[in-house]
Image (cartoon, rainbow, N blue to C red; front, side, top):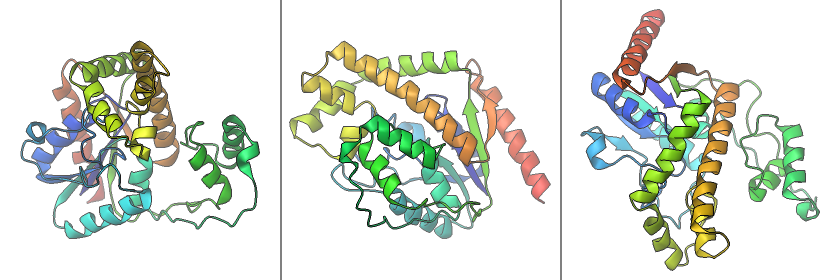
Length: 289
């Protein structure tokens, strides 16, 4: 059985994954693009050893910050783990929907065309609008120029009707927008209190400017602060704002690209949500049998 736990940042995916893993004697596979990197701990809200409660976790901390890791790499690694653990229950957890789709569906990669188009004459916003015409549900950030140009240079990588390769259930954790944004803001404040600035400063002092640090939320904003481009207060506010925007993009992807079964989280008594999800999984298994 493969269970996937998805949702925006800050809704309790990690806790849910561990509780379900204990119940179903499952292994857990990371599905967060930033958590594959070593030493990006506070800014990615990475699970701690204590929080793992002895559950085997995979695809966490597998790459150094200066190593490249793509969705294609993830697809190979995740499918290898699935094949190696066919006799076990597997739980995917994380907010990177594209990684999950690439692993579980017949997601194909197209080679970039040898396009002679010079995109340097266009602004990021103009490129973004061009991409939206091509892929209305794109999850590419308007300021990610590299990905915008890459998208315009290649044929659509995904087949029109993606084929499910592995039987699975996707559980989505959610809450109303006001509560979510409040939780995101508090989470960022907690990250700062527990050492986020110090975590990022170590990389900055070493003059490391790899993609995870220059594009990852919580890292790129503090790099601007260390470059004296913004104040610390402005950087923290940017982290909160970008986290909220990212949550919106996550919802867009999940709702348009994946078959998610959504559950409203009871933050006052998370056990209620766990029980609700367990009951749904039980019913789904009965329907399949």
